[in-house]
Structure formats: C-alpha cells, structure tokens
Length: 194
Image 1 (cartoon, rainbow, N blue to C red):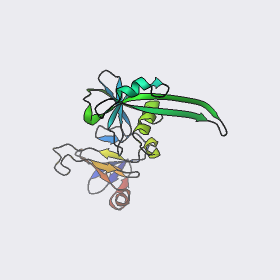
Image 2: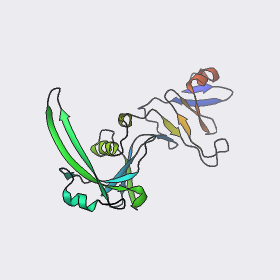
Image 3: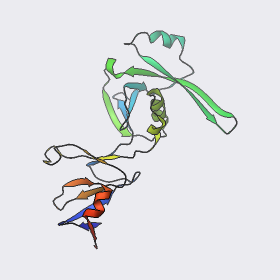
Image 4: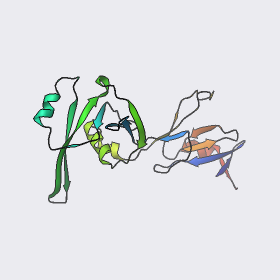
C-alpha cells in the first residue's frame, strides 16, 4: 500500500503470525542449533536464555545408576529426566519417562552445525523448554520481531529496531527502511490510491 508524506513511501503493518518476506526482518521464533554431528542440540528463542546442549537421542526410563556414575562433578556430562503424561479429563492415557544427556556451554566445547526453525510444539523444543525451566510463555508465538540495519546505515549504525504488533515498516523511495509506531503512523501518513 502506498502512503503520502512529503515523499511517497511503502508501508507494511506487522501482525504476529504474519510472515514478512524480507532479509532485514527477523521474527523471534525458535531455532534449533544442532552440533556438527547432529547428536546434540540447543534452542534459541528471543527473550529466553539457553546454557546447555541436550542429546537428540532420548534414553528410555529414568537415569540409570551407570549414567549417574558418569555424571559426577561439574565438568562431567549431566542428565535431564523427563516424565511425560498424556491425559484425558479423568485419567492418564499414556505415560513415558526418558532422559537426555546435558552438556553445559561453559564447560564443553561443541562445534555447531545446521540451524533450522523448529515448531513450538516439537518434542525437542518442549524438552529444552522444560530443561531450561523456561515459563510457559516460551511455547507461545512471538509478539515482537526485529528490523535489522546495515552497519553502514548512518541513522541506526547497525542497530536493530523492535517491531511490535501493529507497528508499520516504512520503506522510503531510496530503499531506507524504518519502524513507525502505530500511534505515530496515522498522524504522519495519508493513504494514496494506487
């Protein structure tokens, strides 16, 4: 849609869940980072701290005595145990206990490999969320995005701007892009028929 100020600009309003096809806009959705050998992973999601690798492989049952014996001291691998219960209103339909190996970032050097987007309902995401003790809000779609600026952009000097629901991404005739808050947008711009 075209809008008029002193110059004509193009504006696109951001709504959570709406994809914006632009290299300079990043949603804060979850990403899975695999180790080079794809045996370990961690999750990154804006606003939530990650500090350990977990094994992709899950071992059935509670942590065994043999595994507990390996996990002695802060420089040893640890284990995170999960107990998953699927319920109906009045009964447990399925129950599963398993564990994953855990390596704390500060003590283990692991080479990163592939990085991909991951569903907020994927088992690896949910296990990581539990292991990191993230709040339930981590499993909800993001409410913000970022507009990244080039380091040579003299106005923003490479800093990113936060895009919140209802904000507008303005593209000037010269290609410069910036974020306009919804309350300022209506006072600044006039819609122009295309």
